[in-house]
Image 1 (cartoon, rainbow, N blue to C red):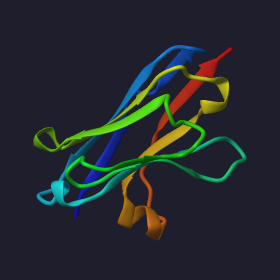
Image 2 (tube, rainbow, N blue to C red; image 1 turned 180 degrees about the horizontal axis):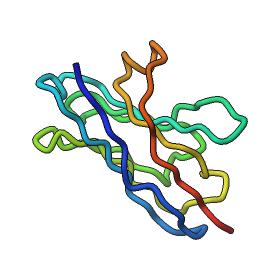
Image 3 (cartoon, rainbow, N blue to C red; image 1 turned 90 degrees about the horizontal axis):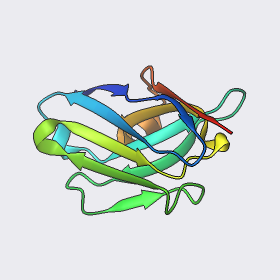
Length: 117
């Protein structure tokens, strides 16, 4: 099975940019559709973006459409989330996951993103 570790979070000013990475291990990484999700304090975990196994298809939550971009490099076993024009409401813990595992409710540690005004 694929193992995932998120990184790249931090503190950024509103309007700034941040790039999150999801490092994967496992022989079958390239076979999985992947997604990014986020959870703010006291809120439900929400879908952010997803990408097909070969990177040909992407989908975004309306709240981030036009600002965030999901991508993957299967040769590097890595999924990325480029976050531009960040807003304070983007503040959350961000998680990457396979879509199958996300549906089952199994999550890693995530990486904290804090956007200051």
